[in-house]
Length: 252
Image (cartoon, rainbow, N blue to C red; front, side, top):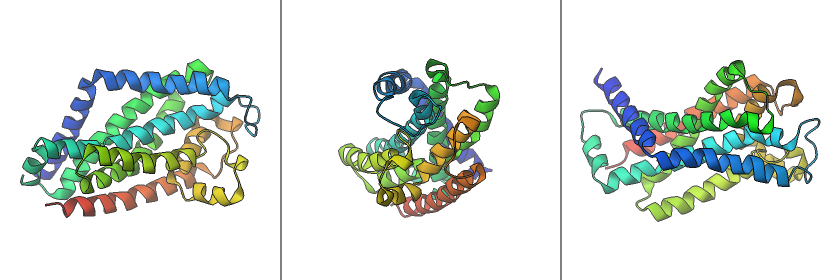
């Protein structure tokens, strides 16, 4: 019970800290809106291969994936903040296992990322995507699964980094390839074959494809069956949780 209580306490702390930062919540609404309205409108005539879909409809699930990616990776910075203010030292010496500490922070950061994803999801009406309660309920578990592995990447990187500046550089180095090679902004059929291979090993590709399958339905010809997308994301999550807990457990 002490382990469960420790996980819950760390989860609650991360969620409360996020909800108190009103600026981040506002920015999570404005930035995706700019992508959908300005970028989506400006680039809709530049891309082909989206079938009967409007370009803004096509990128809508991709922008949700982008929000989940950027927010999840950014949440790793909480490890550096906690180290700077001495909180990390206190929880590391607490009678709770390192695995529980890692899981508590991972679940809290994932919850924060999903909240931002829900905010973006509510913008579907802006681009004419027919989202409803059933689509939302189906999308929510996949959104949560996507965040698990991505948050673990951020936490793992932060466990080896001592400064905010270094974390920002490395985060961008990881974020941008994952985002641009996921098919979030353009169909993968529009890129060279040799570059497609990098997209096929990108876990976010399957997350975005799964979201498109759920949100757009029969209007979207998916890269792979939905159950395969979910399986790939789950395998990625398990692998990153193992890597993250191993890296975190070796901290002194």
